[in-house]
Figure 1 (cartoon, rainbow, N blue to C red):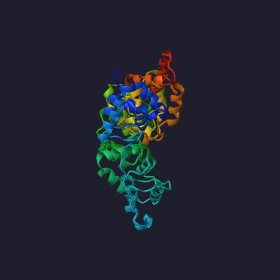
Figure 2 (figure 1 turned 90 degrees about the vertical axis):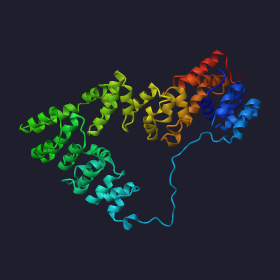
Figure 3 (figure 1 turned 135 degrees about the horizontal axis):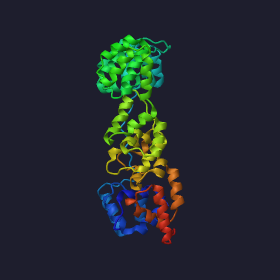
Figure 4 (figure 1 turned 180 degrees about the vertical axis):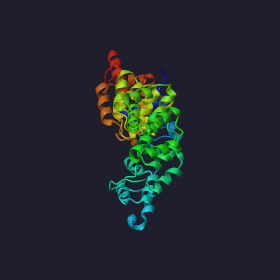
Length: 439
């Protein structure tokens, strides 16, 4: 091997104990020159070790980079999202006094307590303004779509909110209404059947059953008249209207459609390109993901990749399923295939330690942990970099054995296993060569 991958060099010299850097530089020698010539940033430990070692070609490569003005002593360049700086011109005004409640409800910087206080007013115009924003919890959206006041009394959903639903951009309306499929409010149900393409049998039944349960057969029949449901859905509903126990019949049909095993079979069935769409359809139509049954199904036979990746994007995806997706391998080139990973790390559904132990292949994992992946950054993760665990693993497998470190460096570019597997392999290979701390 004539040279070592620059990203691997940078990541390893960033993560390794700085005291090992001189030994690694001495052993690798001119193999580092091509990497130094093209690296955009060089860890301080590597630069200092090169100067201490005194190898002419290595120093020349470092100096050439410095002459181009590209040296960066930071161990990891982290690009944080730009945030506006607050400008203070005096005490913050009391918004509860300075603004009308309706105007205040339109703000995007309200605290949770302020939102709660505004909801406590039970003012239809305030509620509609809050509903149109991004701060309202899903449970509150569902309550408002059901016409339930803060005091627990229920009635028709007020006009300001239904007008918003009729007039809003379709994508926003669809996202809002997922929480209101079972509200039973006739006007909300009219918005649903007129504006949304209900894609599941359960979703179509859910809306009709909701209205029938709260407002009776006549209102449910009026709703059905406005739908474009397929004949296979419409005819059984019409038959139920003529049946004394029709509501119980429809509830039984809905229960059968919502059966967890049936939902799992539906999600797994069909071509791969359809599987993500089926997850979206279940959720958009007010359904839920049967996680316990999905886990059992996955243990029996691994979920298809497109379905597995879409499920991992959901905030309530079980840890076991997320770990299993890590273990299947992270694509290196097609990074757009793993947006789920950034979200899982940022929100704490996965940790840096999970990456360290379960994710593969090692080169991709190392680039993510070292902060040089272009899709996520440890600065944003709930767990941060697993420094303590990585130090413990490195100490356990490599310690001060320069020979083992060099073996690891040379294995990294094409190693398909996990970081832990790579460290264990490097230690075993170094031991087979009679490696020691002195090399």
